Every structure is written in structure tokens, then in C-alpha cells.
Image (cartoon, rainbow, N blue to C red):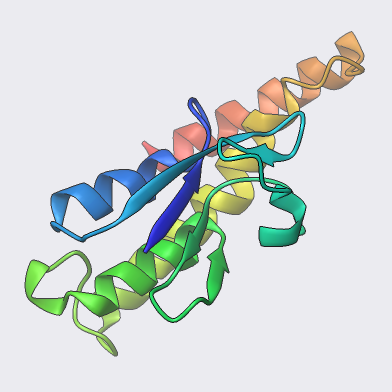
Length: 137
């Protein structure tokens, strides 16, 4: 397997899981601004979405989205107990949290880094973000 990553980006969680569960894998750094891999490949040909993470499986498939990669990895090593048993209510609660994190926490936080954000928009976004963090807590 190969994990395409960028420092400080959302590829950290799959990277941690790959290491903790002792998967055999390679890392390839991606320059997100240039959309090029460390080895010089056009990253958009690997992941047309242009962001990380992307996981290339042993059979050549490319999986994107952190929550999906985490589920894929947990299904590959059930004995590592990375996730609750498939089909259990606990598993669905995990999926609920992964999706909440991706859609409500990550997207809200990521928007705060947009340079074109107006002060009014930033204030509203921060208030929304704090409401989500209160729920998370």
C-alpha cells in the first residue's frame, strides 16, 4: 500500500493507523499547491480531487477520504480492533463520529484558512465551529 500525504493535513489519521496496526506501506509526500508527488508524478492523475489522503491499495485501487480509508484499514485487520465489529451499533456510532468530524468539524475549520474570508464571515464561521466543538465535548 502507499499513502499519499502532506504534512499538517488530514492524512495524519490514516498514517497513524497504518503504523499502529503494523501495515506494510510506503509514504509519498504531495505538494498540494503544485499537485505533484515527491517523485514528480502528477497527483491529479492519482487523485483528481487534488487533496490528501489517498491510499493506493495492493491491487492498485485508490481510496480517498480519511473516514473511508480508516474503515478500509480496520476491515483489513479485524484482530487489531481498530473499529467495533462490523454490523454492531458501536460500529455505526463510530461511522457517525467519523462523518460528523469530516462534515462539521473539518470543513468548518478548513474554511477559516481561506484568505478571501471577510471578517463577518469569519466571525460567523468561528461561532458555528464552537457550537460543533461544544457538541463534540
